[in-house]
Structures are given as structure tokens and as C-alpha cells.
Length: 313
Length: 256
Image (cartoon, rainbow over all chains, first blue to last red):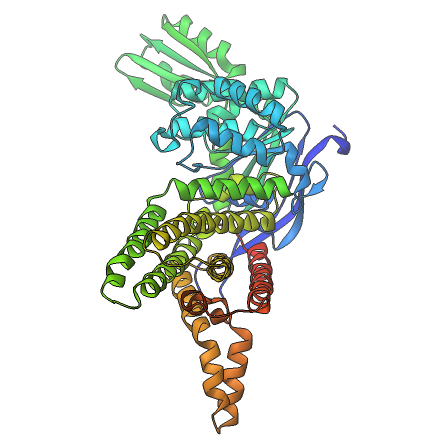
């Protein structure tokens, strides 16, 4: 994709915080750079305290970078006019709890410049979309955490933004709610929106994101397309065998370099994809029983753990 | 821009209307105004004046109390509860947000003033106390004073905690009520530094005594047009300068 399709551009962002009243400063972002392209779902992943929320707050101009530059839709993040096209859901959002869900969405719609004629229809549609029509006239102080998360997503979408920033969007949601949000994010992509999602729930990233950046200790340690991660990773399979003669496990370990784990008369073994046939033939030749063969793909989690471990050294 | 500021302002009024603090302070003020009837009845000759003295003082003090106690948490609460995150992510500048909050609280204090003034006029007319144009001028200048106090509370709220902001705002109000007296006292001092200090205190801190026409109103003393428009311009100008300072500080803040 060429540069004209870049929706978010972050260049060498540096941010220092003063932990207390002293002069000592702690660097939380060490010159991070990345880009988000139009129409993609970008996963911004990292452990707690890695700098995800700080980066998002710089993008939302809630805090200012000490060095570097960040732009959204070609505008510097310090400007305000382009925010008409930006939606944002913060982590653990809190809203005016004296307002009803409907009043809150009207409030944000007005702030975002949604015309009076379109406001009511847009608010109703969003309340339906996030499943809050039944509670639209209840005060937010009566909402559960999951309902607040839903109304938070609705306010981020109320002005039909081109790009949406979601900080831990699945937080506080039950499994059904999480699936609904995942579906919603995928639907946004199908509508041509760009989604920037900060999270540490890796299965959600695997299921929704097109590209991922992993941030550890304020540095981007890994950035690639999700498909590329899986294409590059070595495929494996988990075999469960039974009735193996006692001398066979040792031979398999020696020939194929695998490690076996025993459970009673059953042996479990993880084998590289190219060795699956060889191991199965060897086992069947000595009268072993094949209980199961489960293809196994290296998950984002294992990559994430490796990156975090390397980044922490 | 106007629409965004107005959206924040009307929401601030809605928040105040739905909060208990406003009703407690308003109820207390109305009680004090009504108590003027009892206090006034203790005097045979000055009952009307005492009633109106107590009434105007109640309007002023409770107005200042709302301006300070609601104003000091105006911005801090937004940051503390993180409601500001989703608002500033919308196409609204920090300056517009701060102006909207200020305007909302000013409208709230004026709304509260309207209720109290209705009670004040009703009690005055029921007890036969006169209500003149000077009373109107006195109430107008109380409104200006409240606007200035909201600006000062907003200023402190933009960068410090509600407790410190309350402390600073009350301090400014108390000293502001006395700067004119301090200047007059300093003028008769033989020490140059004392004279200079009191003059500069009067110049820098708000001269809140200039907004007080209660004595003229209650005692039916004559006032000139300048007694009204000069404090009006002074108060609006002072509030504008304080707000510019608040916006400059607010613009530089990090919301962590």
C-alpha cells in the first residue's frame, strides 16, 4: 500500500514521565514508529505498562510527546478539526452517570458536529447496534460494566468516523459480548473503516486484526501482518499414541528429535509437520494405536511471549 | 465553535441541576432570606432594611459558595473521572471545553440567583419593603462578582486539586473583599513599602468591594451610572484575563 493510504503515522515518539515530585524522569516511550494503513484492523499489543495507552493518549492529544511526531489522516494530532473523522474508546471508560444512554449519545453527537436532523436517527441506530435500546432511557449510573463498554463503543461511532481507536475494547465483556464486539469490528472493516485496537487479549487479535505491532518497555519489538506470522511459523502436530512397545519412545526421540510425554499407556508427542508421516509409520509398524492427530499452529501468544522475553532482557 | 461551547455549557448546567449540592445551598439561601422576616421583626424601625440586608447577603454568600464549591472541581472532576478523555477526542479544543465549563457554571449560578431574587422580591413586597432600581443594580453586580469568582475557581481547578483550589479561591475572595480597605489603610501609612504593597495588592487582586451596592440599595442612597458600568467592565475584563490564564495552563497539561 502506498503512503497516501496511511491513516496513522507515528514517527520516533518519545515520552518521559516524572513518577513523583522529583526531577528524575522515566522514559516510557523510546522513539516508537509505526503506520496504520487505510481499511485495516491494526492490533497494538503489549504487556501491562508497555506504553500502549500512553501511545493512544498521544494520538488523542491527551498527553504531548516530548519528541517525535504523530499524525492521523494527514493532520498533526494537536489539531482538532480532523477529529470529526476519529472515534475513540478509552480503557475502562467513564461517562457522565447522571445522563441516560440516549442523552449521552446525543451529547457526543452534538460535540462531533452531527446535524440535528440526523442526530436522533443515528442515536437510535447505534443503541440498536450495541444492544442497548432497552436501557436507552436509564441513567448510566445503573449500567453494568459491560453496558458502559457498549455505550462507549456507541459514542466512538456516533459521528461515523473514518478511523476508530479502541483501547481494550473487550474489557468487561462476557464471551457473548466479546464476540459481538469482534463481529462489530469486522463489520467496520467491511464498511471501509480503519480500526486501531490496543489490547492484550491475543486470541481477539488473531481473530480480527490484519496487522499487529508488539510493544515492550516502550519499544516496538515486532510488527507484521498476522498472516505473515503464521506463514513464517513452523507448523506442528500433536499425536497421541497408545500401546507403544517400551523401546519405541526412545527410538522416536533419537530419530525425530521429539520429546514424549506419557499418560498411562498413552504417549503424547509434538512433531514437526514434515515428520508426522514418519512418526506415524514407525508407530504403526510396531502395532501402536493412533488415538489422535491434531494439527498445531504456532500461536500469536508464543510469538508474543518470545518477544516480551527478549524485550525484557 | 459556539455550538461546541454551548453543548458543554448546557451539559454542565444539567449536571448541576441533577446534583444535590446545588439544592442544599439554594435551600439554605432561601431559608436565610426567609429568616430575614424574623430578624427584621426584632427591630421596630429598621425591619425592612434588616430584612433586605440579610436577603442580599444571603444571595451573595450562597452564590459565592456555589461558584467556589462547584467551580473548584469543575475541571478536576473531569480529569479525575476521565470523562475528559472521550470529550477531547471529539473535534473540540481544550480552550472551548474550558470556556464551556465556565459558561455552564456561570449560567448555573445565575439560575440560582434568579430563584433567590424571586424569593427576595416576594418577601420584600410581602413585608412592605421597597424594591427599587438600585436593588436591581446591586443584584446585577452580584452576578458580575459571581462570574468573576467562577473564573477564579475555574482557573485553580485547571491545575490543582479541589481542596487546594477551594483554599485558594476562598483566600482570593476574602482578600478581594478587603483590598480596597487595605489600600486605604496603606495610604495613611508612613512606611513607603507598606503603601506600595497595599496599592499593588489592590491592583493585582480583584477589588470585590466594588461589586457591593447592598448598602446603597438597602438604605436608598443615590448611585451614578458609573457605579454600575465601571465595576461591570472591570469584572468582565478581570474574568476574561483569568480565563485566558486558565486556558494557557490547561492547554499545556498532560492527562495521564
